[in-house]
Length: 271
Image (cartoon, rainbow, N blue to C red):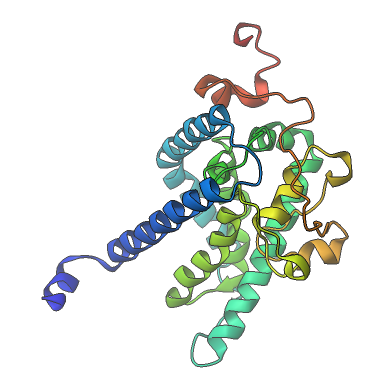
């Protein structure tokens, strides 16, 4: 029976279904933890807005992702894809995976710093930071144009640098993006001395904090090592769970705000 299924269902479909099911289970468990051990009282309005903006981002991704990935592929091919051939046999798998993760985390760190430093990028990224109540969905609360820009301008860097074996790609993506997704959970969990080992909800809450001492801290996606190297790490105290959001407390009101967010103050009809 399994052989028949394997013959009729493409490998990509099996991987997609498996990953989707795994992420679904993780999401349901995460939501239960948020309800049982909340770091702060949940703002229903903010969570509803999270869902609206996440839906907008997902819809736009379906529309623009193929074109953005095609543009990224053109750049990779133009620059000469895979300068460094990575091996996946034996212990080489772990070493190659470590190289990819460190490179990806460095690129993501630099990109994230740029999103906070340059006004044109912050005008988009600030939509994510406008959430005054973090939740499992906040990780998907981003301006709809950010993903296509990331696919065109950032992801090709990995394709240019490395020729990554196919069997290594999916495990690395899961291992890398799960901590970043869970980092927005509204749970009261302190890792104490281990807080600087891996990105976690309390560590990343500091990044979203409205407290002045927390500004421009904890940028990493996976490894606080990057923050430690560049001097932006803030080790949270045991009971340090600050309020989050923008200092101005500005909030999007719905889908329209999500669409025009960077231009909202320039459009008189949007007020």
